[in-house]
Length: 130
Image 1 (cartoon, rainbow, N blue to C red):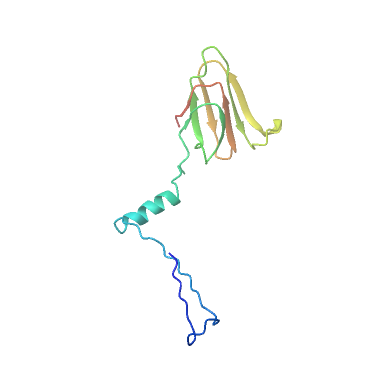
Image 2 (image 1 turned 30 degrees about the vertical axis):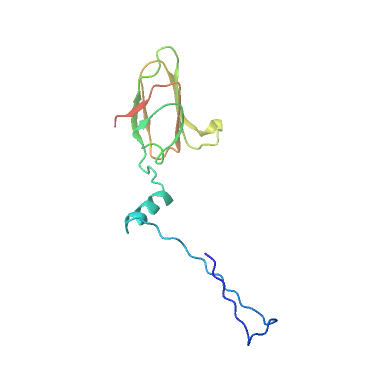
């Protein structure tokens, strides 16, 4: 919205004018309180901050952020080897591997709270059992 105010001095045509700009913000027609809750919900999306007790598939999962420390079991693969690795870092260096394995069939791995990450490839989902 723009409002203009023009002033004049004693009818002189060359007198300077003054202009003022006002910006108005339209109000929502929503019920008070509901608009604030809707605004808050869209401004800050909720994130799942609880680490999962399942490792769903292939990838590198951060301990304490993506997954919880504990003992996990996978049924492995029927026709392929299931690879897993406990990692002290995520740089990809060979020295980052704390322990690893290839298994056909069931595998059980204990992921410590001090582990940085857990990597898995070609395994059925891992379920936390302890």
